[in-house]
Each structure stands twice: as structure tokens, then as C-alpha cells.
Image 1 (cartoon, helix red, strand yellow):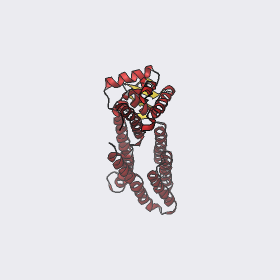
Image 2 (cartoon, chains in turn green, cyan):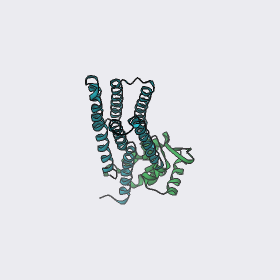
Image 3 (cartoon, chains in turn blue, orange):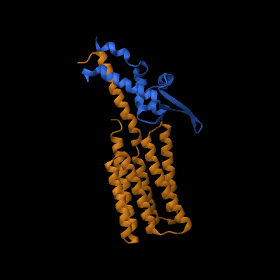
Image 4 (cartoon, chains in turn yellow, orange):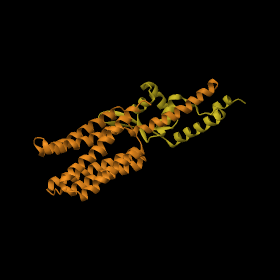
Length: 101
Length: 194
């Protein structure tokens, strides 16, 4: 059995490059707003929005929408399920890459 | 040599590490604030001793610093923010120390109980406590060194003649805040893109 055949065990929601970046960023902070995530990942509004929606759908992140002054803002945080998914993903990745690391 | 699949997975692992570091860097850009709250009081001291209308020096300089501080924080928030437990703890330490200094200054001015030595000791000690607490939370040697400057100023304020305390304050502001802030700002600028 080749190492690549283990690849499907990696969570496809976490595996997406931008989603993975968002989860890793959120793992180091309590909360972050959309602009901060966009700045740190260097992505576009549309792309980031779509990927955040996917993570929210999987319940890996939670969002709170509020107004700062008159402007709407979305504040994101990693859920316990998201933290666990990221840890599981890293662990699986290390297992797959074992000899290559 | 890695095959393309392995290479992609390795890139994912590097991405996680890089993003975790990026996330932690959020709370580290505060050099300008030490510069502002170091240079501001120095300007106030200079104005009070040599400038026109010395009675306006502290109200104007304090208000100016608060406005600049508020505008800078708002501008940064417009670019996006992240909050961490450590960041909240640091903000609480500095916010409490700043509020305590403001309340003490206003109470002293309002009541007319302007015991200079007591005020200097209180202000130095509050700065020393804030620097120390912050350095312990961040486990950060250079900030602890700045705290020692403020502790030294606190002890000096007990023993030196009152007329020399403004010099002690100027020295502590210059070393403990301006120099520390300038060094931190340079460091933040130098490592901004790394």
C-alpha cells in the first residue's frame, strides 16, 4: 500500500489550502474579524467568504455578526470541533509523511 | 526528493506552522504606544518648565496623547483585528495602569493635594507594575529591563530631594519608555515581512 492511498483519510474540509490557513490562524487567537483573516491569508473577499462558509457549515468555526459603529463586522472563532479537526489533520499528515519528515 | 503528493502535504504542514506564527504576531505591535506615552510626558515636562501658559501643559499634552492613541487604535481596527487571551491580559494591565494614573492626576489637581513626591512615587510604581506584569505575561526580558528602570525611579523618588525628581522622571521616561519604544518599533518594522 503506498503512502498516497492514505490521503483520503485527511479531512477534505480541513485540507483546502485557504481553509487550513484560516483554521491555523484562528487556533492562535480567540477571535478574528474578516479583514484580519483576509489580510493574513492574502485572499480575495469572495474566495475567503466561500471558504469561511464551508468551515461554518462543518461547524469548525463560529461567526458572530455585529456592528462596529455603523459598519457590519463578522467575528470568527475556532470551535472545539474545529480545534479537534485541525489536531487530527496535523496528526494524520505527520503519519502520512512520517519517513519524509 | 519528494514526489508531488508528498511535496503538497509538506507544504500544508509548513502552511500550518507559518499561519500559527502569523496569528501570534498580532499582539506584538505596540512600539508606537511606548514612544507616544514616553515622548508625550517629556513634552509636557518641557512645556511646563519652559513653555508659555504652563498651566495648560499637562491637560493639553495628555488630551493630545489620548486623541493620537485613539486615532491610531481605530485606524488599526479598520485594517482588521484579532483578539487573544494574552492580548486581552496585556490590554487590561496597561489600561488599568493608565486609568489609575489619570484618576490620580485628576484627583490631585481637583483636590489641590499636590504632594509632588507622593505623586512621583505613585506614577513610577504604577508604570513599574505595568511593565513588570506585562513582561511576566509575555516572558520578555527587554520589557523586564524597562520595568527595572521604573522600579529604580520609584526607589530613587523615596530618597532624592524633591527638586531632582523631575530629572528622575525624565530619565525614566527616556530610558524606560522612549528608548524601549524606539527599539520595539524598529524591531517590529525590521521583522514585519519575515
